Length: 293
Image (cartoon, rainbow, N blue to C red; front, side, top):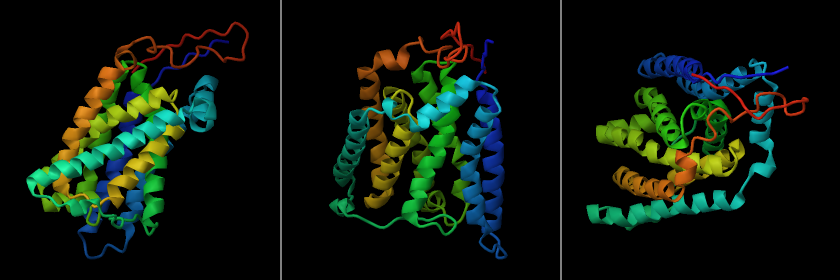
């Protein structure tokens, strides 16, 4: 029997934003009250769970064997991994940081930024290293587990990366109002650093899309890359001024990545063909699928 699955990005993002923002804005309100007894970090963690839980629920209730199988293979299918691409992406990002620090000296910043520093935050009592590991795992389970493909089923990867990058950026908004969060501290330091935070996610998501597609849409590949992005951003003592420089460097790198991978970013062959129309094990299986908003 033919099984046609229609991706539902509007439903996914509506659920995620309502759930996450409700939890995080509640945490912001409680964080400004003296009677807050430590519930804010718990709400922050709960908000972080919204994307992966929503993705898993939408996949598991989809009645699509192909979608369920695809999630499993994207998560644990080692055959999808291209270690060279992952390593190259990490090297590129490390190079972005080095170049950004060197350029920042023109704006009066110090080379002392090359020093290794401690983590700037923890979450709900979870040690910092585990926090950034958990954040990478949970976010990628949500964004690459369902969200990315749900948009790519309708657009080419260039448009998809801009749309998903914009949504990923805006999703962080409530964190700027929760006392104790990294985002809260940079907003208090200078509102323009908040603007830079949002802007920097867009070129970064283009690089994530490249890693994702080149690793045959492997979630694990993006988790690994996401962890190193978080780790390098936390452990290298860059100032917020340097992170503004970093955004411009990322824009250049993202432009080069797109230019060198034009076919990947602008082809439309995958639209409507991310999933098989029927169970691959079933007789008469077709590779066509139908997608929709």
